[in-house]
Length: 465
Image 1 (cartoon, rainbow, N blue to C red):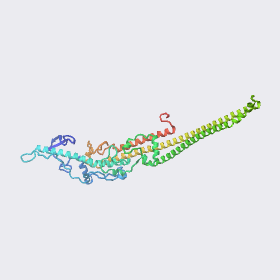
Image 2 (cartoon, one colour):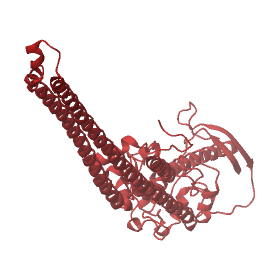
Image 3 (cartoon, rainbow, N blue to C red):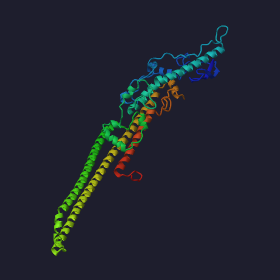
Image 4 (cartoon, rainbow, N blue to C red):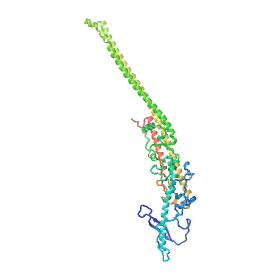
């Protein structure tokens, strides 16, 4: 008989030679045969997933997620959604489908000639290889992908509160969102923590939280924090809101007192000018009376008359000096009041900068805690992935071992690295790490903002103008 070591078939659906036999490596064998795989040699080669599935309890692929492999408690033992019905019942014997049914060359007695047998075995090999590949695709999309997305991706998306359709690599398994929703969400948007939106908006206008593309990819349009810190954010926001209200009230009071001081100064100066004008007008008769003796005699002032005129002028000068002193006193009191109010304003500004610094510091600690929480969840995700790696060998049989050891992309989840049962970097695990990095950077920016608020110094040694 002819033994085929290798048959090459074009399996590219876009190729013009798709399904055609391209080459082969075979030899003629006339020795004894050991039947295997149930005997008869009518099924596909040993690595076929059919034999893997057929070797499982009940001769079907598992339809429930394994428990005890670091899965979140709410999803342990849950059904795998989206499983092809073929894998939910005992499969029939997977017969090879021939690429053609002959006719094959026969001799005069109607028996196949050596050439006829060779052509038939070639067709059987081609049909078996094609059927196996079709089965592998069906197994990958009908069981392995739903299993992987349920076991590995769903709990990680649940941690993030990330819908199945979100991100650059959405999940493909139908009905998997229900499984994601069972996993407790560990993060919330900053604006959904009951913090006063006006406070948050004003604070964000002065503090740059940085960019968060990985957080945005997880479905959020703003920074997120670990859910356990929600009450801390609210408390810090309430304290900051009260401090801001006191700050604005103090500034309004100081501004009001400045206006009052300005009005008092203006009114006082106006009163002094009116008093001086009235005094000057009221003393004109006295001024003339002091000069009557000289007017009547046509002679120079006598000693008494001269003294009377000179005394009046001295009084007039004294009154002018008195008014000037009053004006200077009003100006001095105004300047003293404004200086005192300026000192009060500086004290209020300093106190509020301290509150800003405290608030920024508290938020920094919250984001740092969020970063640590994301890292912890990434570690949990790594445990889930390790559990997936452990689960594969528990399903191993002599047939399935061949599948696991094959250098093929069968069962491979795109973008996750590795091969069947050996994926190393699932998309969701990378997102958890990315969220942690972005939370850590936000914490650093907030810490810088806290330092700047209290010192007025930008790290690096420069003082803002």
